[in-house]
Length: 500
Ligand SMILES: [Zn+2]
Image 1: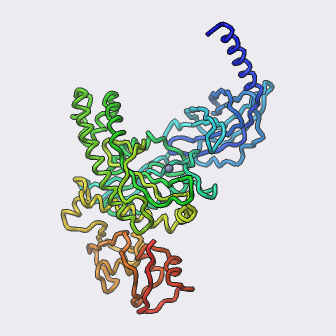
Image 2 (image 1 turned 30 degrees about the vertical axis):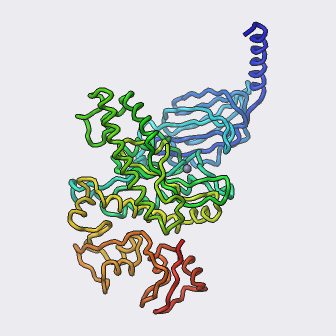
Image 3 (image 1 turned 120 degrees about the horizontal axis):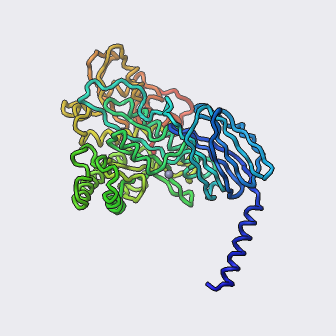
């Protein structure tokens, strides 16, 4: 580089920094999310900024000084409940610095970074306030259910990862408003409830609210929860509105191999990577070749299991919604990145397809989708139940998946409701003539997979909503298919059952 070029470059850089300094930024908005272990604030800015951040105590405060900035924001619209923040105030100082002060209930460990504009947002300043002590409501595990009857029959743990969240909305719907993060959370919650009501299953939510959990962190949470299966829930996007249908992905070999070598080199969390094998077989005790072989074996197993689980889920979804690819797809997705936990990702449909997006946004469809996924999961585990689980015991004792043993005080209608079944459905699947049940009686719970049928002849006592539930369709869909203007039906009447 000649001297003159260097000089010119220097002048240019000086000018550039002058310009950026002259260009005052405005703090246009602030958004907040509460995660189990931290609170995230995102400040939306009109331009890139320089800033400094420091803590003060007595009382606890966090101060953010943003150079050459201003705001007309009052920061009053935020709900600080369950966050460590009491109030946010701001003021412009003589040197054009905008000072934002967070008044805190308790001291926090702050961390911050800036983000460049993307398709959705402009420049942002992200401030994470990590709790110094875990807050009481920070538990990531399933609610306060009683422990299973016997320690020797453990529950199967299913980690449910609702895609995106917080400042990451995921795909945006055809209408410009629908956000993937909300759909994924709703379906994930429905799946959680469904599995939680099943004896022998313990679901765990990777995220429980509208906040972001890093992709790398998601399988880690699953591993800490000793998950037997990792299920990520997403909704798709495409540049035209015609694409539709569900796609199920499992971990791909390419990525797996690359990741494995990296893992072995780092020997990170090595004993954890071998699942239950534990301390004796910690990778650190082996040379790299042996370690790589061990992890590869484990990976080959989880990849195979991922494919089987994905296939069972696809089978179960058939009839609930359109299947885009009738085989489980393999893809290099970071979230499907556990060598030890069978992992699948479900793209539940296209938000860019108006019809599918609207359906995905109804609670009825979310429930049906979740019920079908849960059924697929249970079918998979009943085939090859992990050793020592209640499901393994059930299978060994000839108890069908999703069976329920009647307890004192139970009524048939209560049990039906608990498992999302109609009374008629529960009675039919157990050949019961009356509603009388006995303590200790084992009821089989019919699965969520739709019963293939194109017609239904109405018998005495059946209602339209029960029939709709039986075939996993909505009353509206059933009425539309039969041109019914009200819910009145007659014994002996034959209804058309629409396939979706
Ligand atoms: Zn997604």
